[in-house]
Length: 126
Ligand code: T46
Image 1 (cartoon, protein in one colour):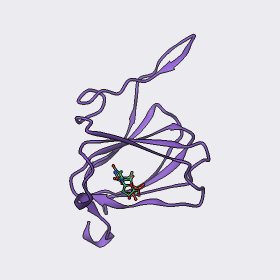
Image 2: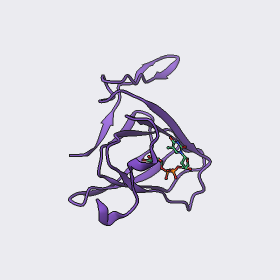
Image 3: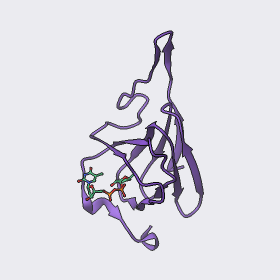
Image 4: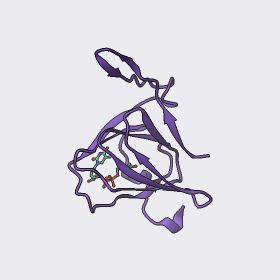
């Protein structure tokens, strides 16, 4: 399957909670890039593309949002509403992000540096 929900271990104690993300350990690739999406208007749909090669993990470190993933065989909507959940999306998966809460910070760990040529913007080209 080229998309999958991951559950990260929470190191919690009386002070609160901590989650550690390490490339090639609980993140199944070397992390080359991190970006985050925030201040998103509630009626906005982001994404609407797939990637030829990139792998990414999406984590709502604050707030919540929904992610539609579609590899033409399986199609699913995930709600990311907890920093201990990460959605792994591999290549050739259409993704749309929507229903952002006003406090949502969606952090993305990517397997490669930014490259606009890695994007597939036509669903028919998947
Ligand atoms: C993805 C989803 C989950 C950069 O210059 N460097 C970067 O690393 C990124 C990610 C974007 N940009 C520029 C390109 C655009 O001018 O930032 C602008 C917004 O990017 P985009 O419209 O691609 O944003 P989303 O939210 O539609 O998609 C992003 C990622 O691009 C994409 O890889 O899988 O988040």
